Image (cartoon, rainbow, N blue to C red; front, side):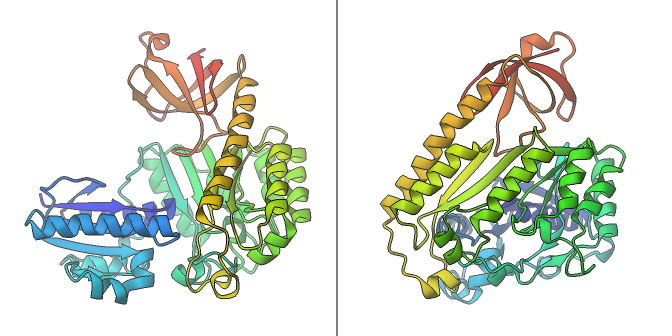
Length: 432
């Protein structure tokens, strides 16, 4: 069987695109290898990211690595698609002629045709999983209608396009039939879902209907935009046991001057939303992403951001230094005048604060019992997660294999654990 090496860079939305493409390749009689250096795969397809400078650099380096492999005769064909190719196709064609073809973000059909295969329209929604089989990302929309000043996503992926509820339900049922137990709902902005095609926000209804699918036990919400956060989504999370008490809301900043330059909502809305979520769902885990070093972030603004992190005590937090992206409002209107060394130092300082908060929150869980989902067996441990943790980015619960005795749980199993020890970002437990 012929092989294709399909390499995915960037975010979870790219993972879903690669899985759709993989299903088409597989239906045409190919074996797909994900993120492999296996030289026996003579065709390589790279799904690129073009979000920030570091991601662009990683994409270019990966492309050049396989260009060299092609020059050495180790591979025969090299195709590139995704965000970087969407935005810089002409430049890339001129600079890297060794790549057979470049494709944009909505060109799966063209990629299949270019590789000499038949695209099967009837397979829309079918995927070959690159994640462990017990969890999957469910992409509910493409593009974004927000105009955050620093973000190039609308320039790359276009306007917001919700995927119809019935199509998403059909996809989720297929995933469940293949062993998926946890759905991670994603889009560039999940809270906008439905406004374009149904003329009103439909995320709560979607979550409710997804929760009725047999086999799906956990549904997790990512990338929720804070302004206009739907009240019915909060009610759904509070009352539906299948919706994880977890939400990922990228607040980006708290200083109003910086938020205004970012073209984001005010800090009054942010504080109100956090208060409302914690009031209606007392045990909710809040994850956020922050952006430091944006034009206008002086020392006072950064101090306000640090105090915000200390006061709110987010359960999970990530931070990125500002990266000027050509064509964005920030790049066209503001001078990127904060040195990289200061941006990086600010990011490190935020993470130092969060490290102490995470350590404190984890210590408070010692002695408590939780239902966890098993992700894998690694070395001497069963590696699992609580409902308050998303895969790859959040805390894990490490359970010594010796504590399992003869009844070793498998990936995707739900088991009860008692937390016995804690570290800054991980917990240790025993089966109960």
